[in-house]
Length: 373
Image (cartoon, rainbow, N blue to C red; front, side, top):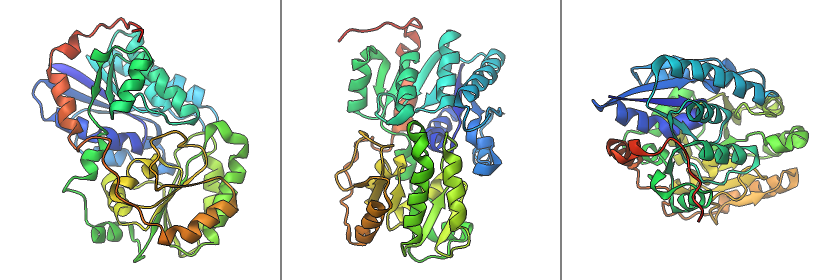
């Protein structure tokens, strides 16, 4: 029996790996472990460990890694220490990490330095800011790559990864996006006490490489929202450097009837809200990846999603109050074509399982080679 260890640090990456964990849990030949850390254990961000526990996975281990938003390097070091200790206890055959967070980097470092196969979900993508440096570093520390599309696969091979180690499985959250098990809108509105007939979604994250300007960016953004007349479901940012500036400014929205503010939302419930929203505004990858598949208009602010697969219908603006207000003034008449799905067919979990069931993947050399193209 192969032991597979998943690492999750945020509500976003859990949404991406949930279907993969679920499918492996049903197989006799795999024993699955889930190492839960990061934002999941922070009360301020909704203590989303509860969402993971609701899934009834067999082996869940928690580890508090957070130091402070200004000390991401120390959080990385602390995560390495905690994750290494857990790996030493369970001795996994494979570690699965997702994306571009410090927790992801910690998992890849521990695996590669302890001769454990590391599999990276959604490597080879361009994410902008410090996230991109982390994502590419993780790819170089990983032995196996589960890419979301042909373009990402091409980049990984360009980075010297051998093509036998790259598998295109699509983006696993598409599995959930088009699932028939999403809750209906009435249920979600009742659950979160959302009173609006029409609403839009706000997701604005800090840009760590622009920390000196983040306070001003947050002020401009909130001012533009206050001068607007739409109803908003506001979701807290992630806990990166600069998040406190955003949270401080969200205080100005708290007694305003047009805003309902949440530290976090259950992933399926969030998807139902997104699917039924008027538009999404901010700089979240949900605006670049998920929203276009539901045909939802997007106002993308600033540089955080620069160079990602930008859909033509996205309204891109800078951080100025004037540009944000300008976009809000035209958004109601902005029509979007649903995008063709470039991130899989909603069967990522099945493709992932099929790769792990083949012997080839377990024969891959733990000693990485750089392949000249």
